[in-house]
Image 1 (tube, rainbow, N blue to C red):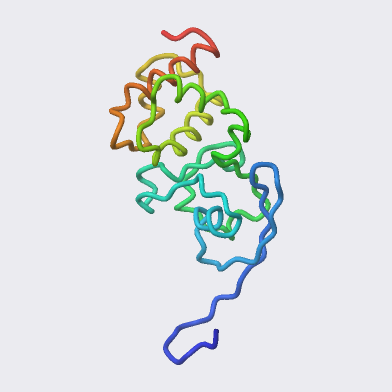
Image 2 (cartoon, rainbow, N blue to C red):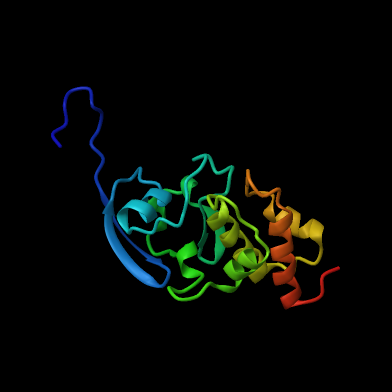
Length: 169
């Protein structure tokens, strides 16, 4: 692209290498490219959904170096050297992962748009927090918005997963 008068400065692309679901990707990216767009457009992982683009709805939640993060609030250039897990990392082509299976068993999804964000949030919570009561489960899920389910089935699925890790109060 040839810059025209009044277009502003031309941004230089930056080369980054990130590990996504165990695979290293090196790409030259625009400095303003959001991580959510990088995942979807640059490497073709469309399981990460983009809802509000303000970090409020949680649909774009991924794990960044093992902790949940909103991919719509991060620039891809910030993540050179980072390890990212997306919803695609949870299962295999021929089987669901444990968190996905609990969602299926408890009918914890309807339209499915918010589901990847919930799955990644829950994965982080179960790895790092005991979730010993329904109140703690609801608090852990409070950053994710679902317009379909009413949350009860989601809480039931997480309760089952939390019980597998230990007693629930």
